[in-house]
Amino acid sequence: MSQHTDSAENANALAQLTAKPQHLLLGMTFVMSMVFAVWQALLNNFVIERAAFTGAEIGMLQSLREVPGFLAFTAVFVLLFIKEQAFALLSLAILCVGVAITGFFPSVIGLYITTVIMSIGFHYYETINQSLTLQWLDKKDTAAFMGKALAWRSAAALTGYGSIWLIMTWLKLDYVWMYAIIGGLGAIMVLSMVVLFPNFRQAAPQTKKLILRKRYWLYYLLTFFSGARRQIFVVFAGFMMVEKFGYTVSEITALFLINYVINLAFAPAIGRFIGRIGERKALSVEYVGLALVFTSYAFVENAQFAAALYVIDHLLFAMAIAMKTYFQKIADQQDIASTMSVSFTINHIAAVVIPALLGLLWLSSPTAVFLIGTVFAICSLLLALNVPEQPTVGNETNWPKTTIES
Image 1 (cartoon, one colour):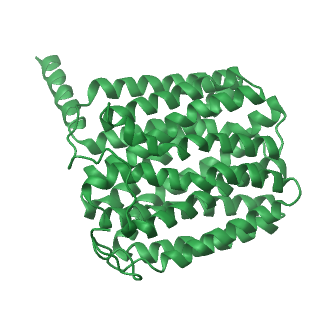
Image 2 (spheres, rainbow, N blue to C red; image 1 turned 90 degrees about the vertical axis):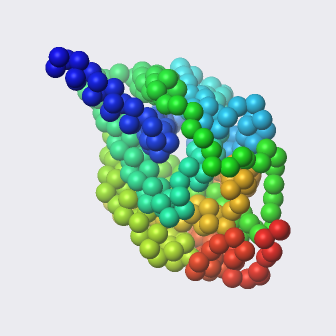
């Protein structure tokens, strides 16, 4: 009798867990973050130790990684044949497979190919995940939920970094096994979500064509500079830690662990904070902070201070939640999927070009690379000042005012 009761309770708990789309969003977020965190944490050491990468090769690899992001607008055409929820899970599976096979191809060309496979899954997933989040959540709850999702990302990354310690440090296994195990585990978790979760309804039918609306122009520009600025952090801040300061895999992993512990602690509060102070103030705080951080990167000579800057940089990016909630408040519901696809492409216009060009500049002046990041942050700050205190449909910018039809 007791066993029957326990089974019924377990079944009921599982039904409750899989009944809400928010739980699926958090589950997908966990898998993506765990798998991608391992790929990212090992990348700089792997390419330098096994493929003798310099700044030029890492810049090219990162540019190739961003090509699928540049092509994210094609997601809206894929949605003609597959529903968004299924597309998100399929993309997540491709990401896991790409990471799983990375260690088997320790050469320049091999790494370029596996990176592109991983990136196709990553960027399509991120595009659709953002679309589903903005559709499935009420506007008043979105900032708080995104803060919670960031905390889940951090917990997942910590799980990934713990697996690096277990597999590479304790079990003494090579990169190839680390990538294969974490990618395979992620794929199994994706399959479990396919089986367990029902197909959730969307709030409104989505436009199945590309759209560019004049009244979204400020969001488009904020997105463009976000992509340009973030590439400098993603590509060159971590690379500097290894090349300039000689950080090992264990030290890079420790730095990432600190990053994610801080995000795990503060991200939910940041989400609630954005909900209270509004998008304009939140974005302004982010961009002022990033301008100071990039300027400091340019001249840092102390390894510990560089690590502190890296942690602050990572924490400030949590404020980017405000850009998404700003769009949710000004958007027509049926525009969300199409605009997310277009905005990912806009985000990656600079991302495709900047790593390769700045990778060449890095060979002669790493300082100049980071000062360019400062310029991008200042441009973002000027744009953020045009965000209204209370953005709504018809009140998208302080100046100029646009019509709802545009």
